[in-house]
Length: 91
Image (cartoon, rainbow, N blue to C red; front, top):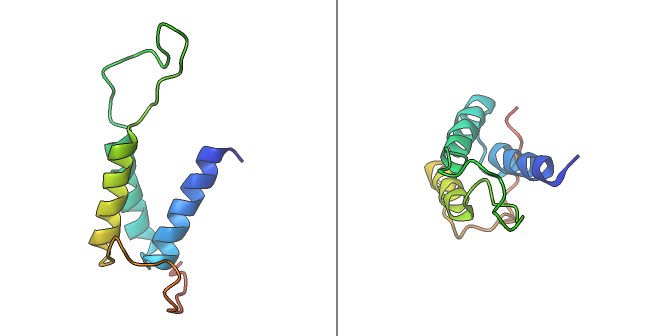
């Protein structure tokens, strides 16, 4: 499994487990998040003229999209993941 797939799995685990989203909510939120983060870039080459690889998304957009998902679910951005509340995955 590559690093990208591992991060996707972690994000989905957070959405299902900690944010207690059901599967359909998770799919909808994840789809919207990816559309926002990976919107069409103005450049078509994945690397610069010097050979450096360009990022395919902006980290600021990813951060804003994740914050939006967290707040839509009723959580606060400052909430701890281990707040002592027993949660179950709603799948």
